[in-house]
Image (cartoon, rainbow, N blue to C red; front, side, top):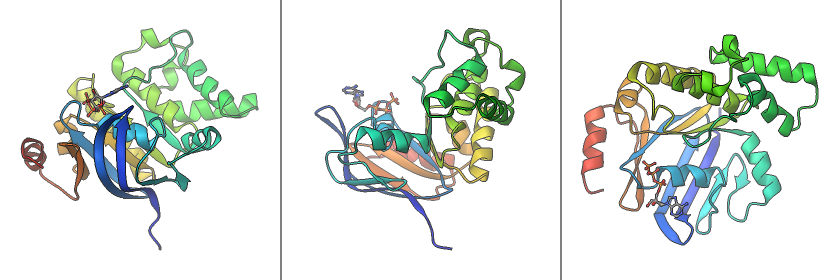
Length: 240
Ligand SMILES: Nc1ncnc2c1ncn2[C@@H]1O[C@H](COP(=O)(O)OP(=O)(O)OP(=O)(O)O)[C@@H](O)[C@H]1O
């Protein structure tokens, strides 16, 4: 079977307003890959992810995600693209004024789902996937950090996205909970979803070594198939 490329960047530049963050980014991601993005604080991991999500505009170079051209992308296309991409961002919190079920049904309603029964079934389905069905009537403040993150992941997969972008999804969690969240991503990946995850969490990388993109010194390097955690640490320390 032909390989399907879901993300392609060619000589792309990542900007935060007028500040250049990453230059000459070349990246090709195949459907079904699991990829980490690592790098020290402020090196551009989040900015890269936000560029792929069309949250930051692509001014320079070529970028294509799931068939959508990022340069000059129109609002309508951004909405269509985001429906095919699930996001699990650290600063992408649950709505605090509604319970778990309502947080999820709200997303379906605002992405065009009309039928009450279909909405209910889909919410129950994704809550089951993340093991949170029992907590569907809880308010976000009644949940632990790990539980909230599970709900955020459930929200990200509501519209059955092809790609999941995750920015430090285990950032504020204890090691055991981090591992459970990683297991969820591994399962979603095994079901065919492409995962791109920015992380500082070497325990996560050690548990599931995978292709890793390194942000450093304004460039993105691709250490395909790195298997050793130690190597990742070396990569971060060296002047690449
Ligand atoms: N909204 C913004 N406006 C201007 N500059 C920004 C903005 N957000 C981030 N930056 C700058 O862009 C650079 C890259 O930030 P980014 O958040 O992508 O890094 P990161 O590698 O994800 O860091 P962290 O590990 O802290 O999340 C930093 O120098 C940061 O100060």
